[in-house]
Image 1 (cartoon, rainbow, N blue to C red):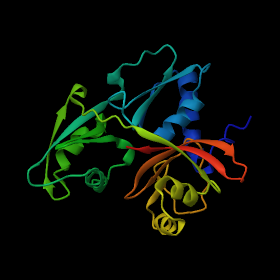
Image 2: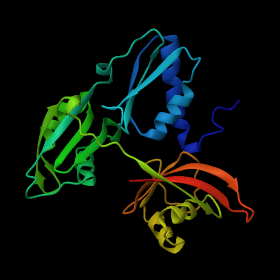
Image 3: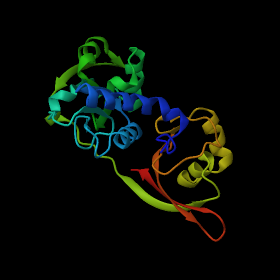
Length: 257
């Protein structure tokens, strides 16, 4: 069976990487700790290292509700501990009475430090608290160099995972019908916008599929895909449930609350 047949071509390099990690765990008895993976990458890794394999797989991102997680791939005899995932939680201290910091501000500031997205996990925000989950090997660098976020001067302090902000995400599930599974058609149904309004948002780099910018309105989405449209939020195509008598696709999707 061709292992690639159920995946998109742009996912092949990551699949090859996971298979290499699996092989090293099975043949060399090595332990591999990855960068932070998004949920789609976690799904791919899970499908490549399935039951019956001599390699095992565990995820941890700081909490049970973390979205972005590091993966540990290891021989079956190895017993992983949370400390093996080398995760640091940094609390952001800033003048909350005078300035507001948003998720995109933190993301932009971290990227401006020259960091890869895989080196930090979830960015947690609750009222006037903000936390950043980072890989342990870059935590000192971030604490020393991240001095401003947006217009705010900030100080970072390492805190325990027990002090993590609880922000479990929930998707409101809905159903609908679409004429095709094109990205513009599905986003139009989910966000109740006309295709004439959706299309320029897609071509203007404001749409993402599985956390990657997608500028093709004709891009075909699949069950399990995470979708987002800047300014309108995130959603997930949960299932495609066949066609109606009018030859339209029945879909089930969730909108992040």
